[in-house]
Structures are given as structure tokens and as C-alpha cells.
Length: 327
Image (cartoon, rainbow, N blue to C red; front, side):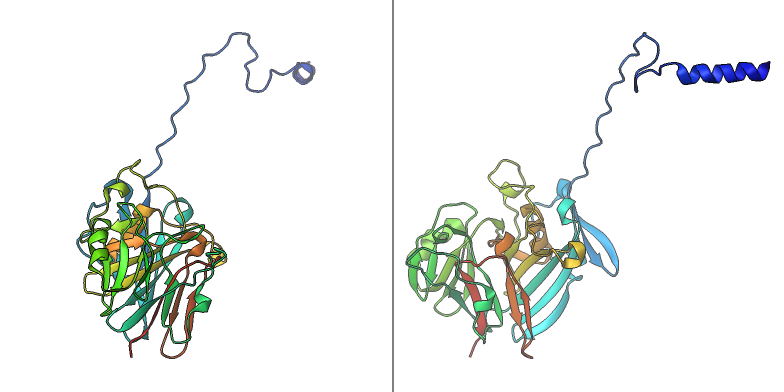
């Protein structure tokens, strides 16, 4: 008898219509539960690979306003390789937030007293600006990379080549110039000093770029520390920068995405502008400016043994900076 009752109860359970999914069978409505707030996202941060481990060295919520000197945990993690007299190149690995979870950094450090710098620029009567890449560098060049920013008609801003001014300065508080005088001295000229430097003359070459990421001996510009001041603080991209070190040497920094074993290295994934300021500051630069990045960024280093180390871009550019040994 008990077994029959159990069978009847099971049959009723199978034939009784079930309540709609997520709704109680009773007509009495249950009170809605309040939605839980999403946990806040952690602030962007950067870690460097050193000694087989990752060490965090920068966070956006406590980023320094000034970099008074190189940060040893970052500077000492660079693996430097000799190239030519006055030139060496290095590598560094970073881990950041989002798309920047694995970023390789290629560095070239050079002494301008041992290298002669020239601008590669060929004006086009049909206004086709993108005419140069590192494959066009002369055979005796030991260093080459794309220089400055550009628009649909060619290089953006002030341009002097072989002592002839080909473009007037453009306006922008974070748009400094890189100049070489007739004696071969390389200098970083802040925007508020451009007019005076232009009036003084004695220049062999000059080009303008933006934004500056370090000014006045390691100062991070206010526009890179405060949202809404004209520079995006969150946009990520492949980056190329040029900085002046405190010992007189100069530094080129190129970032590359390392996802899928480096197969996608040319994708425009990478660091933000404030993160590039931190990288240049941690490597010892007192002044630095971004050059055109994204698909344009490219770098060539040749050593005295004849080996070439090339990090190509995906498009040609109107302006390149090339260095050959001084004779």
C-alpha cells in the first residue's frame, strides 16, 4: 500500500505544471533583492619582469608628479646590447592593465656627439606624405626611426632640413621641438622657447612633435595627471618616444604588443600616455616627447658586425630621423 502511494505521488509530481522559471509557484510575490554594486576596477598599474619575476613599480592612483632620477627596478631590468660606437640597444618586458597585459619595449640609447643626425624627408608635388620607412635608411645608418607627427599634407609643425625652414612652428603647449645646430649639438626645445630659438638661427635641422610627456627635469605635465586637460589618459596604443637623458645621451623607446607569442606585435595595443611618461621617467629621462605611434612606429638598429635589428611599422611616414657615425 505504501509503495502504491509513493508511485501515485511521483505521478502527480510529473503531471503537475511547473511554475515558470525564476517565479515562485505561490501567487504571493517576493520582494525584489537590491542589485549588488560592481566592485571597483583596480587602478591601472605597471609591472616589470626582473629576475624571472614580475615587480609592480607604478600605479595611476599614486603616480609621481616628477621623476627626479631613474628607478633602479626598471632601469636595471634592461638587457643592453652594444651596436656601434655611441649606440646600444636594449629590451624590457612590462605587464599592464587590459590590452597592455604583455608589452615588449625596445630601446636605443645613443650619444649625439658620436653620431650625425639627419632628417629623411622628400617633399612630394602631389602631396603624398607617406613616403619613408626604415627600409629606406642608407647603408651606413646605424639608427633610424620615424620622427614627429603628421597630417594629410606631410610633417606637422616646425620643420628645418639642411638649414632651410620648410614648415613654420605650430601651436601647442605640449608641442616641443627637437633641434640640431650647425655644430651638431642635439637639444630639446620646449614650446614656450620655440620663438626665441627660431629667431636665433644657426640650425641644421628641427622638427616638432607632441605631446611632451616629461618637462623641466622630469616633471610630468599637468595635462597627463588631470582628466579633461586635452590629453587622453586612457587610450592605449603602440608608442614611440624620444627622451633626453641627464648624462647627455638620448633614448628612443618603442613598444610592441606580445600577445600570441609576438605574432600580433604590430597591433595598436600598448601603453597610455601617462604610462609612457612613467616609463621614460623610470629610465632616467629628464625631458621626453611622443613621436607618431600606432601603425607608424618603427625602429632600425645596425651594429658594427653588420647585423640589422628592425622593428617595422605598417605604414610609410613623411619624416624619418637617421643617424650615421661621425667621420
